[in-house]
Image 1 (cartoon, one colour):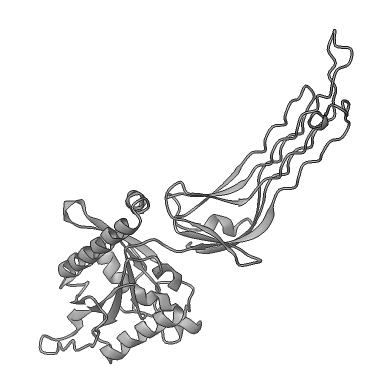
Image 2: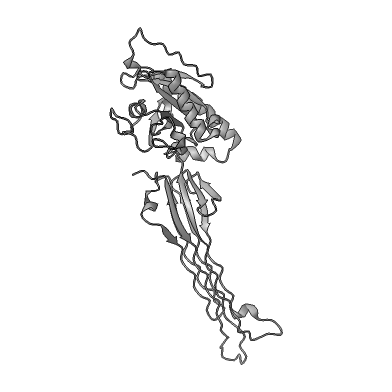
Amino acid sequence: MFIDFARIRVKGGAGGAGAVAFRREKGVPRGGPAGGNGGRGGDVVLVADTQLSTLLDYSYRESYAAGRAGHGEGSNKTGADGDERELPVPLGTVVRDADTEERLGELLKQGDRLVVARGGRGGRGNASYATSTHQTPREWEPGEWGEERRIELELKLIADVGLVGEPNAGKSTLLSAVSAARPKIADYPFTTLEPNLGVVGLSDGRSMVIADIPGIIEGAADGKGLGTQFLRHIERTRTLALTVPADSEDLQATYELLRGELLSHDAALEQIPHCLVITKADLRAADDRDWDVDSPDAWGLFVISSVTGEGLSDFLQGLWRHVDQEKQRERAESPDLFPELEEWRP
């Protein structure tokens, strides 16, 4: 089951209390204070893990706590720190405070860590209160409580290409034809109820990740159909492929509908380059192939058939060239981030 949103409660471990103790040693008639400090409570930390592709684990349980610290002891012994609680999440997870909606961070690379609930500070023992004028203190501090909050986890898939189109536009068939992914395919709308990822292998060891997004209908940005539930997954793609089936009654209207719904969902999507893909070309006779679609913002137009294989090679090569250009631009802008991302791409 694909789960891309979860709300959980996290709590840092409580700090340990300081101790009140005095030295008791042979030959030392007036032993001074020797109460140690309490340990520090453990943190709750989210850790990015490439082995995960969904937030399913967090739909079964909603509370997670780190370990509490040990109390201080005599002989100036500091209490043990509390155990850290690590929570693995998929790459592309965005984290927010559920009450304030403050964005806490996001995890994009394997091993990225984000502390979401800090452990409490340990209390001071009486040895910390000793001064030249107060040599036998009995004061001590309790440990602080750990931070507690509700957080929202939102997964945005990381893919090179996002397939966008109406239900039954041929997106799932296309993904199954060019990759090892096996999404559900049927001749009725909304067979794709969750995003699917497929790795497309090309010659010379080249590869790219394509995401199949559930079908978009008119009014999707306002919640109709599957609404905006899965549109978030195209926000991290390097390019979009807007799919329009050849048997559509009006190719131009379908293309404009897709563009309009995407921009209604998030105007920033206009910054993601896109190409236009006419699918199901095998449904048109040879003398009925007028692909007159006005798409000045598209970087390319491809006509394909996932059944016969027509145009697939040119389509994939065109995608690769554009994705590679985007990668080079991203490396130039963020050299420390994207070389590592390539190693962890699912």
